[in-house]
Image (cartoon, rainbow, N blue to C red; front, side):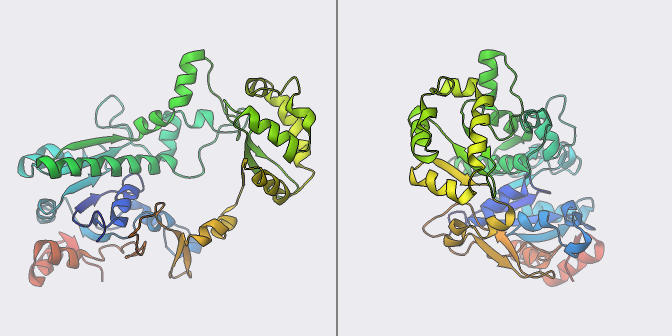
Length: 399
C-alpha cells in the first residue's frame, strides 16, 4: 500500500501550478480526480503543434496517475455532481483566478459549512488578497514580478527567464507539502482548513539569499550568466567540445584545483586570486585566465581530472544527453509511453522509497475518460443516472 492511498483528492487544477503538485500526491497513491470543463478541458490540451499530432507535452508532463472527469460547473446538475464528489473528498485543489470558485458556489467559505473536515487549497499568481489578487498570472509573469528575471541572463544585462516553468513547479510543490500537512492535522483534529498558496510569495521566498545580501549592502543583484555572486570560480566554461560547470567552494579546493587539475600551482597564491574574496573581487581577471586554459582540452578531459580530485563539476547537457545520462539510466528514471507519434520518454518520480513500485499506473487521462467510472465508484451512481446527466450536459463521458 502506498502512503497516500487513503486520500481522495478532487482537483480543479489547470496548467502546471496546481497539477504538478497533485500529480505528486497521485504518485504516492492518492486517488486524484482531475475535473475539467466541457469543450477543450484543461486549456493546455491545446498547447501543441502540428508535428505533435494534437498531443500536448504540457498536459502529458503533469497529469500521470490521475483519473479524469468532465463536469459543467455552470450547469446546476453538474454543480450538484461536484458537490457530491466534494462530500467524498479529503481535499480540494484549485488554481482558477481568485473569485472564480466563489461565483460557482464552490469556494471554501461555502463548502466549509457543509464539510468542516475538508482541506481546500487555492493556488494563484498573487494570492487571494491584496491589490494584485485579481491579476492573471503565468510562470513567466511571476518570474518577472518575483525578481527572477532581474537576476537571470547574461553579464551584459540581457535578461532571460528560466528555460523551464520553475515557479509553477516550485509553487506546486509548496501546495503539495502544505496540503499534506493540513491533511495530517485534519486526521488528528477532524478540522479542515483553507490554504492560500501564492506564486509570488514562493518566488520571493526563493530569493532569500539575494534579498539578504541586498539588505546588507544596498547593491542590487544583477544577471551574471552562470556565475554566482558569492563564489568564484562557480560557473560554466567553454571547452573544445561541450561546456562544463565547475564549483570551487573553498580556498583548499582552489589550491587543489590549481595544483592538480590545471597544473598551474602559480595561480593558487596569485595576488589577485589567493582567497575567496579576492577571486570574487577580481572575477573578470579570473575568467580571462581560466577560459583559455579550458579551451585547450575537451570536456571529458576536464571532468575526469576534476572528478579525480573530488571537486564539484558537471557536464552542460542538452536534452538528448540527459535522456541517455548514465546515472539516470542506471536508476531507471525514464519510462516510455506509446503515443500516436511513437514512444516518448517521460521523467519518473524525483524521489525513491523502499516501496516505490511502478512510477506510472495510469497515463494522463483523456478528456472525460473516467467520468463514468468515477461517478459509479465514488458515488455509487447507476448507469441510467449517469446517462441522464450526460443528456443534460452536466457531465461528459469520453466516447
